[in-house]
Length: 243
Ligand SMILES: NC(=O)c1ccc[n+]([C@@H]2O[C@H](COP(=O)([O-])OP(=O)(O)OC[C@H]3O[C@@H](n4cnc5c(N)ncnc54)[C@H](OP(=O)(O)O)[C@@H]3O)[C@@H](O)[C@H]2O)c1
Image (cartoon, rainbow, N blue to C red):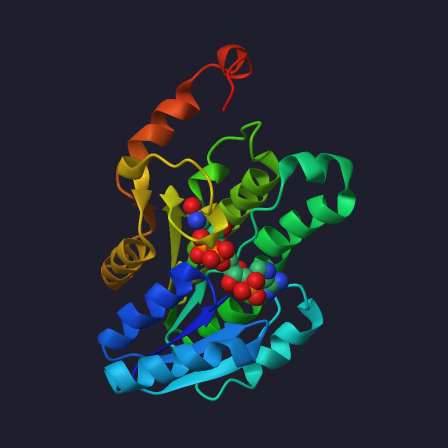
């Protein structure tokens, strides 16, 4: 059975991905901070899809634990998906370094720390796929979320370089750039329904794109064109806008 390791498995997108991949016959390694909270998902996956699902404790900020975490996995997964993230508050982060550094560390440093370990192992094996969930927020800094956006921009650049490095060892790296997704991260936000995806739609798009070894996936697709417009607005105009 092929298997996928999902980092940040309590997230709404991660849970949808777990069902999508389990439905395609993958065994699932679910990794999250509070492992006991994963049990209902583990049972549901095993019952519905007749696959094996494991639960593992993982904290993106516990950098020192990452090498041992990966070495001690019950199976060596074909695919690793880095799904965890933290939106946080830009306004709070401006005044409080604890909040700012938390945003930067979860979305960038933690992701780089674990994916360095994963990529090195996969390159040694000459086999594997890494899926990194970044964001369209990383395409251009905006006043509403520039701490989160700058961390995602860094993550996008990291994944691009990692893809280039890993290509030579038959390891594929896919960057996912979602627009809005209806999850607990965006709860209470006034999102345009036409531009907002469900976690299930994102999971299906990810499965299909990874299967075709796509490099970059925008989901929903129209975000590719929205971001193309946003990134071409001249800076002297952009700085006056409220975005
Ligand atoms: N929702 C959107 O509109 C949107 C748009 C673009 C990109 N994204 C990205 O999509 C991914 C999934 O987000 P989502 O919308 O599904 O959000 P979500 O439901 O809020 O999930 C975020 C997950 O990240 C986990 N996490 C936070 N800090 C962690 C840490 N230190 N170690 C391990 N896990 C940690 C959380 O774990 P706990 O359950 O333990 O708190 C939570 O399960 C994220 O990378 C996000 O940035 C989301």
